[in-house]
Every structure is written in C-alpha cells, then in structure tokens.
Length: 68
Image (cartoon, one colour):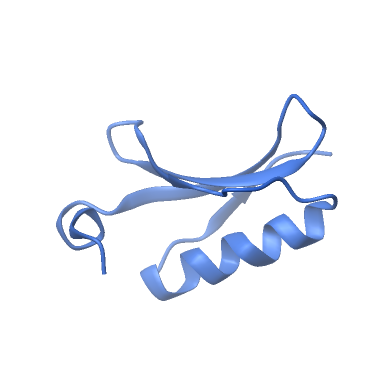
C-alpha cells in the first residue's frame, strides 16, 4: 500500500478521453493533485472503466466516468 493511500488517499478516480482519443483513468487527491494514473491508454471506455474499478474498489472510492 502506498503511503498516500493510507494518509490522505485519493478523493476520486476519473475516467476520461485523452488528446490521442484513448481512454485513461487517474486518481485525484483531495487537494486536486493527480496521485496515480493509467500508464497506457485504452481503446475502449469499457477497459478503462474496468481498470479504474480495480483500482478504486479496494480503496472504497466510486469512479467518476466522463461522458462519451
């Protein structure tokens, strides 16, 4: 477990489309700083959502999904 997860933890996990038209996720802390993110872009929103949920669920966070 990373130290920031135990101390302040991410506020939310966002799924979004990047400039290359790929889907990604990122964890955002309470102060607005990105504390973790996908290392790769996904071709479909479904795969990005699945990865975001795998990250968020054990931490008790509900992912926030971008509009298509």
